[in-house]
Figure 1 (spheres, rainbow, N blue to C red):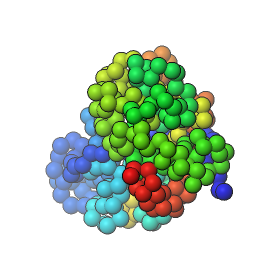
Figure 2 (cartoon, rainbow, N blue to C red; figure 1 turned 180 degrees about the horizontal axis):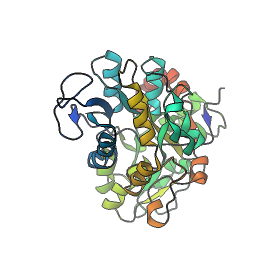
Figure 3 (cartoon, rainbow, N blue to C red; figure 1 turned 120 degrees about the vertical axis):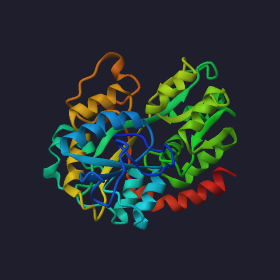
Figure 4 (cartoon, rainbow, N blue to C red; figure 1 turned 90 degrees about the vertical axis):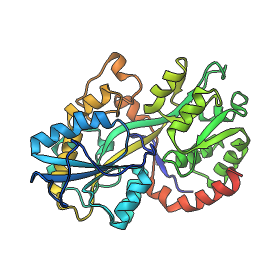
Length: 357
C-alpha cells in the first residue's frame, strides 16, 4: 500500500466559506482588464473573505503605494474561486488556495510557472514551504495545523490522541469535517492510523469512520458551524484548524487545543500566478511581499496567519494560537495532495455511502 504522507511540514487554513463579488482593496472603481480608472496598473487577487480589514491595511495598501498599482480582490471559498479560474470567467492574476485545491489547479494546468529568481524572499522561508507542490509552482505563505479542540467541562480525561475521538468521552457529542472540506481527507488518514496502520489502508480507514459515525452530531463544512456548536455545548469537540481556536476560546474560555500524539496535520495555503495573467512579474513581486518578514510578522501578531519566514522572531503571547517555530513545523504530517486528488472521488462516494448514512 502506498504511503501517502510525509512526517513533516506546514501550513494553514483553508475552508472558510464566504461568497462574494469582486471589490477593490482601496474602494476604487476599475476600468479594463489591466488598468484602473486612474491609469494605474491593476492586479486582481482571488482570496478568502477572512481578515479583510487586516489584508487591506497591512498587505494590499502598502504594496499599492510602493508599486503604483490598484489591487482588486475577488472573494469566495476555495472551490468556487478555482471553478471560476477553470471556466475562464474571471480576470484573476493571483490566487490564494489551500494546497488541496491548488493541486487540482496544477493538474488542470491553470497556473503559470513561477520565476523563483523574482521571489528572493523564498530564501527566508522554511524549506518545506518553498515548493510544497513542486518547483514550478507557488510557495506556501503560511503554516498551520489541524488538531483537536475540546471542552474540558464535557470531556473529563485529557485528550492526547486521534484515537480519543473514538472513546466514550466523545459519545454522541463530536464533530468531524466533511470529506469535501479541506480537512476531510486528513480524517481519512487519521482513521487509518487509529485502526493501527503505519501505512494508509483505505478499507480500514472507512471501517473506523463508520464506527465513529453514530457519535457525530454533524459533519461540518464551515468552521463557523464548529464554533456555533461548540459555544452552545452541542459538541464536546473535534478536529479543527488551530487558527480558529481563538474563536472557540472566546465562547468557552477553558477550551483546550492539542496536537495529537500521532501528529497534527499540516494545512498549507499557497499563492500562485494564474495562467495567462498579463501581470505575471507584478504578481511575483506580490508573492515576494507576502513572504517578507514585515508582512509575515504582522500577520502572526494579528493571529491572521502563522509565519513561514524564519526571520520572524516571536515570544510570549505572540506565539499562542499559531504554529510557530521549526520544531512545531517539523512535527506536522503533510498529505500527498496528488494522491488525495487522485482518490477523492472514490473517497467521497464511500464517505456518503458508508459514513454519513
